[in-house]
Length: 410
Image (cartoon, rainbow, N blue to C red; front, side):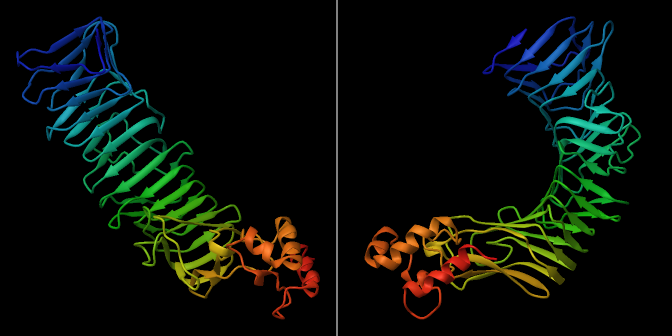
């Protein structure tokens, strides 16, 4: 039986008092299937029956009944679309084999996968998206490594085992293929070291991620909440949710391979531009990647303090910063407890206003010396003063050696 993408299926619209049986056949749902709220009948899959909820399809549960394994060969429910429980504060049990290549959303009550769960092996959860605002329960849940996309939304969100014990108590690794989000007051504590090789987001100011043994970030760490840990960053740290403040109550060490990403869309810290707030020491290395958002254009002299710390040392080795009008650029200024980006005038010798003195400046430099009028026509947004390399107020042959020194530093 196939349900078209614009089709609808209502299960249990009329309560019979006996299970609704799907026996020895396959349903391919490409539309919307609803398990009605007023239904009190279980759904029984028997004799190898298969329910495929296809990509783009929806299977919505509005009650607390069960999808059970019936007699005969093993049956299965395969979700590649969206399986969501929207009503019922008690438990919807899935007793047949279940696989999730799509989105499992739990807005209310409990979804209990008591049968074989294809996405869980050993202590690793793989594949699929899990948006949990209530409770996801499955047999022997003890996730040590996450290789799926988990969103825990709100303080009541939970993943537990069949005995209602915390299924995340031993979570210590977010795999390179994993994404882990804590939102809207959902906190997390790891007693020991936590390694993030995927995407870790603390997505609310009232959410805290704690790792008593430190956070080793090899992937991407983002958000606007609090990281209660000493953080070592060899991946990417991106404060904010375009933009915002990420707080670290501990030390921050950025390795040579690490990058700090800052978005700037105005002058208000944590509101219009990103900020990393470190309570302890910040030891800097690696790269700084700054970009402008929301069509914002800063002016000469504007400054943006994007990092504050109890103490700060080191510098960013690689700078990816915006090149502004007339070759002005945003340069980091280092202080003992903060780092700011300051909009500075263009560098002398930057004749094409690309915010660098390089081989592309040779032709416009010569043009500025031999035909200043032609230079201004060809480079209307640049200034002849960029060719005054010796700061004598003139653009002439006396500037050539200083230009070569800037172009070819020792």
